Length: 443
Image 1 (spheres, helix red, strand yellow):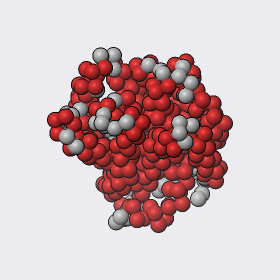
Image 2 (spheres, rainbow, N blue to C red; image 1 turned 90 degrees about the vertical axis):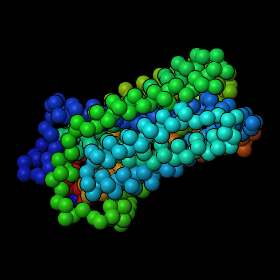
Image 3 (cartoon, one colour; image 1 turned 30 degrees about the vertical axis):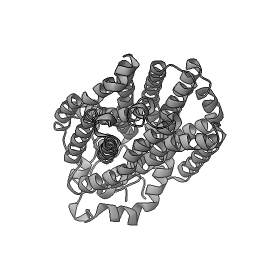
Image 4 (cartoon, rainbow, N blue to C red; image 1 turned 180 degrees about the horizontal axis):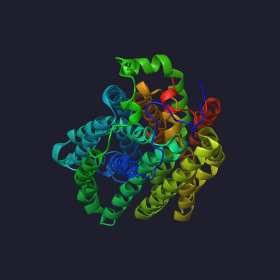
């Protein structure tokens, strides 16, 4: 790969904008941020509900620990559908452009989330209630499969080369902000008496999605296609981007997946499994939800800061710092979560989310810079989705299973978590730093 001077873009086809402070660039950043906020509000709303209420609504006939495990199983189902969504949306995004594909993913997400809030209880339709729940979760996963990678590319491929990391991070920050609104929404309705919360209160945040969907559609339709894609030589476009990506960039996909899986595991363990564990240990439900909201705020702030730093120091260096810090923190985090103290739980979640942000901030640009334009949507989407399956989707389920297997002990969980982070450290170390490469010249 030939490295070029980032400040000399004269004559390069599809050169990025020269500033983030233009009307068109602000609209593009807002589209990525707000679009991701809406999609991840929907997606993470389900994760929060699975931790605090779904075991009581859909699996109330099971023992509590088994009910929580079953609830996390439906959560994991959505993550399993994400790579399929990434492949399908990535195919059309690489063949026909980023914008229309992102509108389609948002519409599917908003509709499926609203329908979750309308599922009749098991008392009304019996076993069909959890079956419909799983089906809608699969649709959620399919929809979000093409969202984060695509919205990140929408910004990345418009942004000035020397500010790509910071610009791309707005998509990631939108996802984190979606988590804030999701946990706040559940926290507010959890103030209801428990019988009302379990019967109908939890449904309100899901039904609210239909309003967010209308806002998101108006935002998405106003943006333009990226110049990097618009100016790509279409004769270079493969017939099947997925096949071309695996054939020519499979190693890069493995690198990005292994580099990202631990950042998703941080959230999966501390704010999903950890939320359920802290409530079980004695932390009040509403307090625990507010703690995860505070953690999401720390994640947004850290994501913004680390992305900006990565434009100066490189993606790998900043991500490596976060990975090493979380590796050293594993034993303390599990002890704090298990303490039953709201203050210790707060310390665990805020610290973990802040460290996650060190990895999450540069990750968008890091992923986008590993793939050429002709397969970038497919490669980026699959990178996000496979890493999120291992981390965000399977981590709460694996954590719950390991704790049940170990008769309540978190030692086995800590060992598996540390091993996962160690693999991420090696992957980041072996990755190529491409902060100074032009997107058009990446092969």
